[in-house]
Image 1 (tube, rainbow, N blue to C red):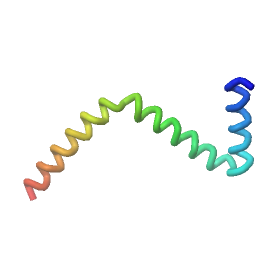
Image 2 (image 1 turned 60 degrees about the vertical axis):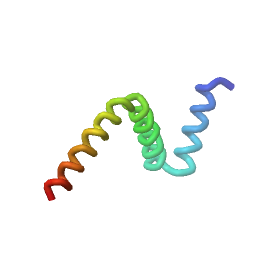
Image 3 (image 1 turned 120 degrees about the vertical axis):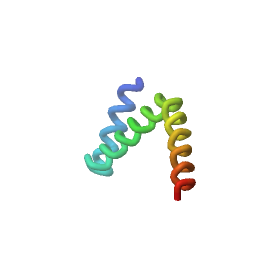
Amino acid sequence: MDGCCVEKVFCELLSTLMGPFFSFLFFSFLFFVFVLSSMQSTLQSTLIRWRQTQHFGTFLL
């Protein structure tokens, strides 16, 4: 069995067991993780910037 076949069987299992909505959620989660890993450096800089603005906000309060 090649990867494609296994993937197909897995997809069918998912849709049969949990329904289309849950399989959609699952693949959305997979896509989210993929985007997260590919944009890790951007996210880190954004997080640092967000922490700085949070610190600034608490300083203002």
